[in-house]
Image (cartoon, rainbow, N blue to C red; front, side, top):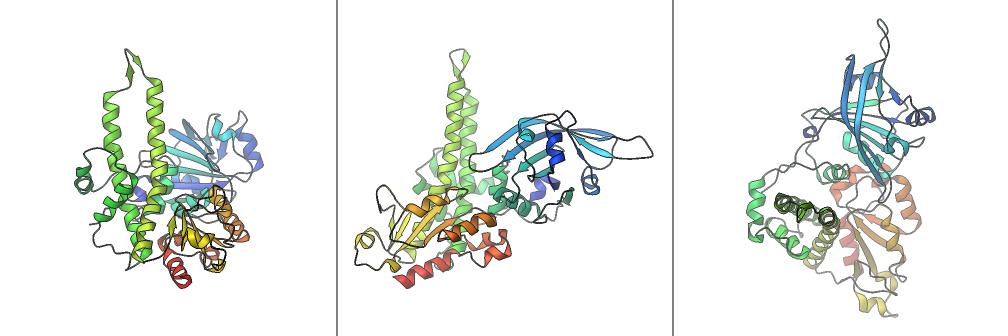
Length: 403
C-alpha cells in the first residue's frame, strides 16, 4: 500500500528569486526598506495599487544557523499614473539585517495568500535545495525571476519534504486511516527507534532489499517518516490538550522542556532510522560488518566492514577494510567521519541530504571521502556531481568484492 505524498502546489502558488546586491543590502538596513519590482515579480503578485501581505522572514545559513521573524510585506504602486512602478516594502527585522552581498532572496507566495521571505547564503547547499525544490535556474540573477507552481506539480518526494521541514512547513498528513491501522498496536506510545523501524519494514511486506537496496531503503524511510509524524501529532496533540499549568500559573519551563524534547526526538530519530534500515539491508546481503565498533581512542564509525577484529589485526590488508559513516543530514558534520579510522584511507559517507553544494562535495573529494546517496536523490545534484556520487547498491557491490 502506498501513501499519497502531497504536491508542492498544496503549499505554494509561486516563487520569485534574486541575488542581493550591495545597494540592496544597504537598503535592508536603512529606513528605505524596499525591493524594486521586475516583470517576473509582477507576474507573481499582480499590479494592484496596494496590498499588505502577512509574511514570515527566514534566514537559513549553516549548521544551527537560522533566524525567523513574523512581519509583513507591502506590495504597492510607487508612481502616479501614467507611470507604473511597483515596490515591495518591508519593516526592519533581524533576518534582513543578517543578509550580505551575494546572498539569495526567495519570495514565495503561499496558498493561504501569505508570503515567505527566505534569505540564504549564495552558492550554498540550502540555496541549491530551494532552487531544486521550486524548479528554478541554478544561478539566480540580479533581478527577480519567478516560477508559477501549478496543480500539475509533481508529488513531494522524500527530498522535497526534507527541505520543507527546514522551512518549518508541516506536511499535511494523507492516508491517515492506513497509518492509524499500522500504529494501533503502539497504544499511543513511542517505542524504541529499533522497534519503530522494524514496524515500518513489516508494514511493507512486498519490499525486499535483495530486489534493490536503494529502493528498499527509501521505501522504509518514507513509511517510517509518515508513521512517526502521525504518531507524534497524536501524542503531542493529547499533551497540549492537557495544558501546561503549575498550580494556577502557566508552566513556562515545562512547556519549553516539552518543546525541546519534541525537537530532539525528531533529530535523533532520523539518524537512528537510517542506521537501522542500513543494518537490515547489510544483513540481508550477508555482509560482515560491525555497527558502532571502536577504532582509535573514542572514535566509533557507524559501520566497519568486515569488523572490529579485522581492523585491529595488523596483518589484515587495509585495502579490504571499509568504513561507512551514516548521517541523515550532512551539513558541516561530514568532517567527523575523517578521523574515525586511521587504517582506512578512503572513507565513505551515506546521507539523505539533497543538493549539497559543489564546494562541499569538492572538499569531500579532496579529503578522500566518497559520498553515497540512495539513487533517487541523485537527481537533486548537478550533472557534474552525479558522475562522482555512489548509490547504495554500488557500495554494497564494492564491499562484497572486498569480502
